Length: 263
Image 1 (cartoon, rainbow, N blue to C red):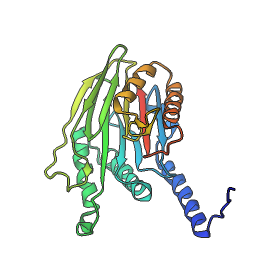
Image 2 (tube, rainbow, N blue to C red):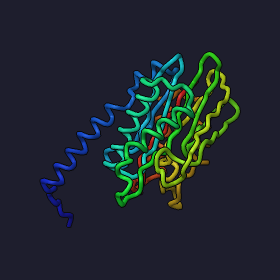
Image 3 (spheres, rainbow, N blue to C red):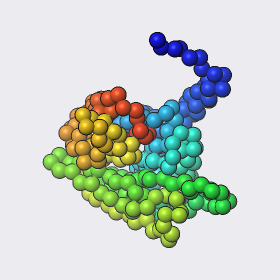
Image 4 (tube, one colour):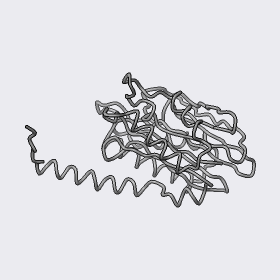
């Protein structure tokens, strides 16, 4: 016999509060029209583990340069979602208001401001928060992508090849991890029609499949290569279906975010 247990008043209020928080959080993320204004074709696969998410993405245009950021905040749920809101505001300030251009300078400033946000909490007994992320800057006049990364990667797929670019091996914040961090800036050339993919680690870390293993980064990159020539709305549908099929009946383990665009 299955018992239909009632939801308590407090549980109902919590769910309603989370639903409202989700509405606010998604209102802060870029909309489809923002992507269309900057890029020929693109998608954002965004799947919170539990209503609200610690993953985020941000884009903007300044000084004739196009910027895209995808990040993964430490933790889950409310605390991670609040960190994502902080990160969105920091990128808006550093790129759009302060006008920093170079991706390494942007991450240095983001790291500084992020740590300053918690400097009065240094003696509290919990792990300092951090963010894994990548920021790319697209110069359409030079057909060049500049990027800096905090513990994440950039996947660049061309017609007959794919390149995976790595950056710094430490995050934004999490200042107990490594002191005196110095984020580096790298660049690569692209041709019209090339694809770029950024993401968190939620997709590749999902347990599933016939042997209940992690999906893996290599499998994700291979899958993206197999669909990169499709229109991006088809890529999004294929990616969502691939994730659902791999997960099967297993619970989602983490927030998931994958953003792709055609240059």
